[in-house]
Every structure is written in C-alpha cells, then in structure tokens.
Image (cartoon, rainbow, N blue to C red; front, top):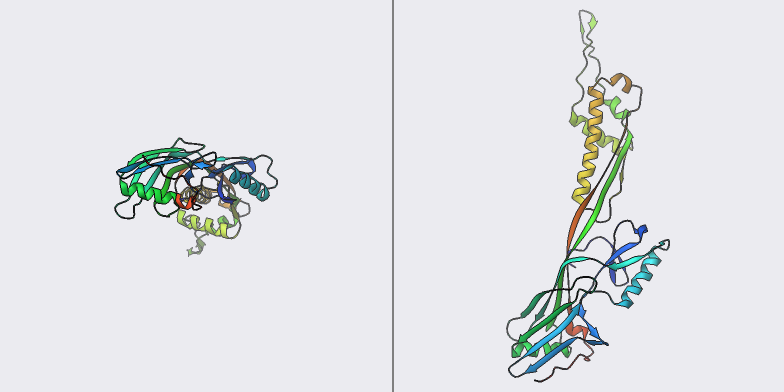
Length: 301
C-alpha cells in the first residue's frame, strides 16, 4: 500500500473503522491481488505456439472467506464489548489492474490498465495477444518462475472524517495578570487617574498558551482516526484564537473591575466534516502464487 490510512491489523487484513469503533462498521483494505479461482483452479488460459500466443485471465482483489473469518475473530478479540460487527471491503474508487509480463530478453509488456468491476470483488478481465518471448515468459511464470508476471492494482480510498474539539476553562487568572495598572506618577502631588492601555491581542494569545500549559484551559479533541492533521491544527488554532479574543475583549470593554475578583469562563466547541483521499497500490507475483507447480499448463494451438 502506497498510502495507508490509520487503522489496525486484524489477521491478514488492515481494518479502518468508519466512525467510532463502538458503532461496529469497519471496512477492510484488500491485500495482495490474485488470480480468481474456478473450483480451486486459477482462471488463466495461455495458448502458446511458435508464432506467439494468447493470454486470458481473471483477477480479483479481496480477502478470502478464511481471511475474513480470521479478521472477524481478531476484531472481536480486540474489542470484546462490540455488540455489532459489520466488516466489509472498503468502497474503492477507480480501481484498475495491470498485468506486467517480463521476458528473459526484451522489454516488459504491460497489459492494461483494465477497470475492475468494483466492490466487492474488484474483478478485472485481461486478454491479449503475445509475442513469442512474452508467451514464453507467461509459460515460465505458470511453472513457478518469479518475476515474469506481476499483477498490480491501484485505487483511491475516499473517507469522510470528522474534526471536532472543545476548548473550555477559566481565563480569570490570565485576565488578572493582564489587568492594566494605574499610573502612580504624581503631578502637583496628585496621582493621575489614567491607566495603562489594555494588552494587545498578541499578549492575549500568549496568555492563552499559558492557560493551556497550566491547565486553566482544557482542549478536548474528538477527531476521527483519519482526520487530516492540517484540519485538526486549523480547528484547534481557531479555538485558541476565539479564547484570545474573548480575553482581549474583556480587558478592553470595561470588565476590569469585575475581572479583579471574578472568574472569566470560556467554552467553545467546533465540529466539521472533511474528506480525505488515500492512494492504494498493491501487487503480487503470480508465479510465486503458483510456486507449487500446479498451475495450468500452457496449451498448443
């Protein structure tokens, strides 16, 4: 996988919760693609002669029944309180497949891309005429020689993620620390009633940082697992900025007398939905998948 989302391993598959894990809806990412089977035999035909050949095959990109059963057991072991489990393959966009055939001498041949059938099997159909050296490469792959026939899948995984956070606490201590003080300079024996100007917004921003560090403000994050870092950071910055403006306004709008003795409560929540896309890529050496030598023998025309 070239761009794997956050999730967890369950058996041989990677699981991505769609919402809170407690909701039980979990998508799994397909692992290595493979040739489809018909009564246990791979669906591939090679007609091979001295003048070349013809290849036809079907491929799929999904977990086997045994892999799914193992994944379900692993999930329930990991989350024993889960009341409902809906485990299904991820809904991938633009899933396409390629076959790459590499002769012993000469350039590699890429067949495809072929668009897949989509969920749940992501089946792709291939058919192509082959030059003699290409047909020989496929025949070698079917006899277990690695590196001759590679199956590659690519797709996009689009997720709807939630970015949510709350900032709450008491700004009273920060306000009192920033209260403007009276000018004690005497003129003619009398103190001047003027006060220092209220702190600027940058000072209030710094005070919010101090409040978070000292536990006077608490930031509670409720982001989903694959919420983008940029969206999380932007939301948290917005909450801190709102707190800084609240503090600045209180100091600038004549609340100083009350602030000297009272708390200055602050609470702000924010939530939004964001969309994030992951580029998935996986491949398999089809010769390695048939390393036992039981693959179909090439037929002669």
